[in-house]
Length: 318
Image (cartoon, rainbow, N blue to C red; front, side):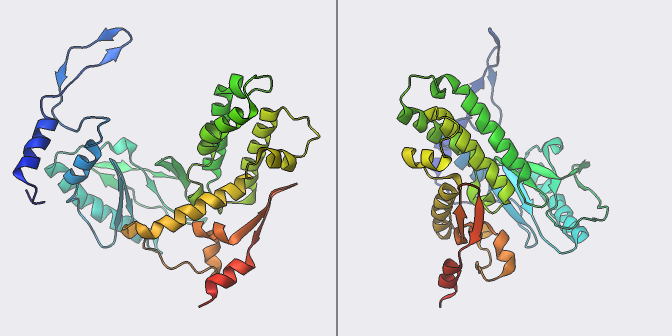
């Protein structure tokens, strides 16, 4: 009612949510139908919108920012003193508990975690944040929306697991892209581009400025996959394989998709994206994700990364 929704919309929504049942299957045994007393229908296109309407009045604090994606919520705050940042989070969580109780939303404290982003090596002992009387543990890394975030944001763990996951997907396609497979090379390459590479490069516009050691793992993995696809002998140069297959090296492809990603950001009205203007002349900007667009890469015979001076000059040109 507070959103000025029409009575007809409320009736349609009520009809959509009520009179729904669920059943549980274990092997070949199916349970009796039970009514769904709360929540939205899973898999429906309308359910995420209804959930966003339901949590529309979630508390907002000037010292904290919320990042909400469906039912995954991250509470962000920053301060040069970690104890003050923790205190701000605890103040917000205390208010959030009241809101959760009013709207009968249950939170699983065991799935909550607190991650402190800092480059400091020696950290003081901080009091844990509590929610509904249970402490939220401090962790050194946490998986959020498919990205493994670590305290120093070097993404070492994420890239290692991404390569492992991509390798497993390639293994699952083994009979199709194996050297002795009768499938045409163009179809093998299509499988790699459509299935394996997206798994490896998920979120690359965010972690593209990671260390050369991590980036080298990605190119080495692609070299192995392409060599396997064309069944090339060991003495064939990797650069020649990329040229024959007309496929970009990993870092060049990451730069292409990152450019498209950052070009779309100004069109998104999200307060979390209203960051300070990117200035490539500032030394600290080298660690920002957008800095990947200022680099040029040498992929063969080994990976090297250089700051593109001409691009920086263009950005600084009034």
